[in-house]
Length: 449
Length: 90
Image 1: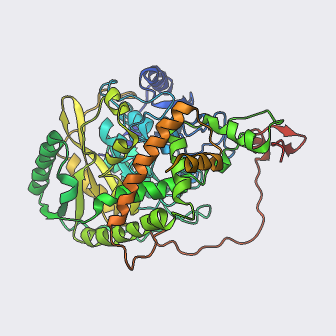
Image 2: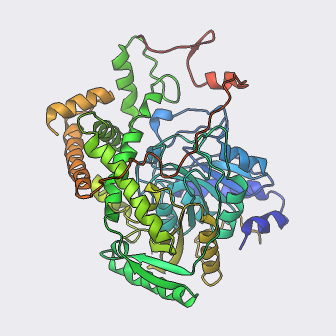
Image 3: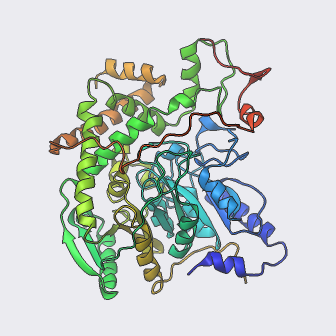
């Protein structure tokens, strides 16, 4: 189903745009999906932008106090390409500060799950997922470093696509970890994602890591279940997931089980690399160039920067400290260098597996947690919930999360992974799934009656 | 990580913490590092360091100046004196 085409072809009643934004603003008071809503909606299909992607003249903070008030003087490449194609920008979406989180709670006003506000929205692209779940016609520009598209898409019951690393330009993205960051797309249907992806991908002279990929479209009709990703997870998730596997088998897919030794080591490898890279960025947030201003210029140089950094949240401070440590000369080989080699090993292992077919797993090993329960987890317990989403992110592999069932009113989602540049075949499988399964949404703001 | 090492790190990172926050974060950092130590279980002999997950072709832009037309908007983000950005004492 292509709702973009449906929206563009439909006749909109007078005052449609105003009504949509009014309803959205009202609901936003409850769900905190947006950090700001622009207050105008043109003729084009609405799109939102995660708050770590620059939009010219619109406050962009990555949900951090240290960037409060920052007004980019340019559009990120993906934003410019959306605007060039007549899409209509509606606002900046909430997120965990700088992308540091899995549940959306590391924000000053955490986004809430649209199915039930007592549950988390997932992170770090929490607002993008909530916006996609509540707006009938909309696509979200989101971003993933270690699972920041899949996790919130899963918890909010929408489709979340993270492309091959380098497929979409990162120019205008506020860095978390350069070698892991990927801009991606959320929507209610895989066909909408394909439409937008084809429109905005491709090399950008402003991002040396962006690539004009040699896209394939290979579906070998095989689904691979990796033992380490389907064993030892929440029992309800496991049994529902096996129901999905049966249905895919019914659609003509052969199911193969495989073991990928050390795949669980993707978590420490990922966090080591991500924190090491993240710890090099705070130099930009100095208290006088962007965002927060420390206007006491009488302070000593060190004191000036130290006081500016009091604006960082707790998770940001923790990651900066850890990242600085693992890059230290005395332990670099033990942590940072070792993590890069583990990434190399996993790239090799997963490439072999993905040459045989798609890897399928639940997107998250747990059901959607309540806000209180997620908030009481230690940082390490939170990191370990990323076991499904980290391997493809660490290795730059395209992946997509899509809903496949509902349990006690909350969505359950699966994640499909494929080899680099085979993004379209993977989206094609989800498109096929959608022909026989209807996604549920609690809100349909903007519905054309 | 001992207290001295942790203090050194905070100083390098220019991050200040109160006593309670410091004790909490240090405990969490120790637990996370213990977990990172499990990378040692993986045999990576012969493996290269993968700085990127894809092969990034070497690309160079022409070494030439280009116009940036929105300097005023850029300067709106800073405190300025005439056309200078005001910063801390060095």
